[in-house]
Length: 77
Image (cartoon, rainbow, N blue to C red; front, side):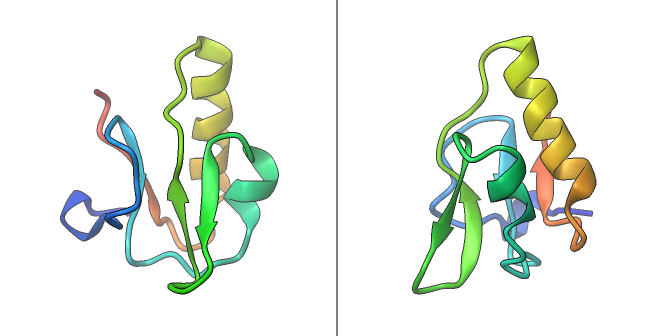
């Protein structure tokens, strides 16, 4: 389960985030490329844009559910 205390600094402020458990598998970037980006130097994903519509939130939720490292968190805000 993702930890807000371990979230990457590149994440934009908001409910979804990626933490230090990310294994750079590309799953979230394939599912929701408009919302997840890659830090090439750190070799991990991060949230580059927060979803605003219910469809976008569902897409980010799908990315979170499919994350094999459980590195995507949702603090519900």
